[in-house]
Image (cartoon, rainbow, N blue to C red; front, side, top):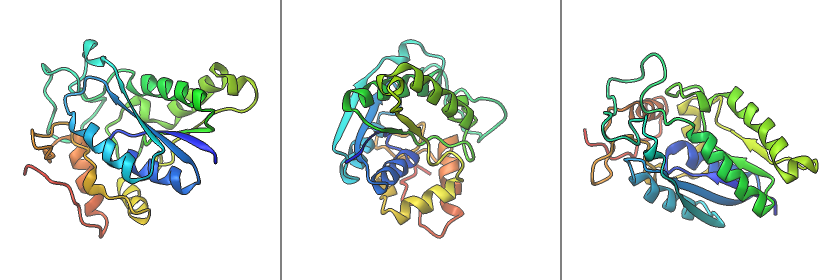
Length: 224
């Protein structure tokens, strides 16, 4: 069986990416990161998603990106905005996060001799993060080709971003087709102690709008 490392955050997009990788015939190795994020509920969700979608193994790596700060998701002194998606790059952007995550996933893929890495980034219904764009994925692919044994040997590890040009509603429909239980996932930047989504942050607004654009009921437990 061919192998893929799949970045699983516990959110809607990464769960769908995992389901798509499985549909394409990969043995899936899920990887998640405790990077100092304020919303740890997603790690419990990632564990459930990886198990129920048949990951061969789920690896949780400990990082300390909160030591760097600079993001509302890692610095408790910066408020998570709740006025909706605005202009520019929001304070919920975590500097270099996907570059760090992909680099560690790339290392594990080398160890596993995996053919692909799946990441659930999206550049349609998103908050404008620079490391979610197609040109970023293309640039990282070139780096992976140069920086790995498989790349040098002519067997490059492919960086797969199957959701990157889909709307949120299209992603939800794909996941529903594949049997993803979105009730297990959480996309919120500011959940409460019971892991209920705030319903106000960018991630919640995009998730809500995605479900509203389909005939699929939204299973999210919101605070409001």
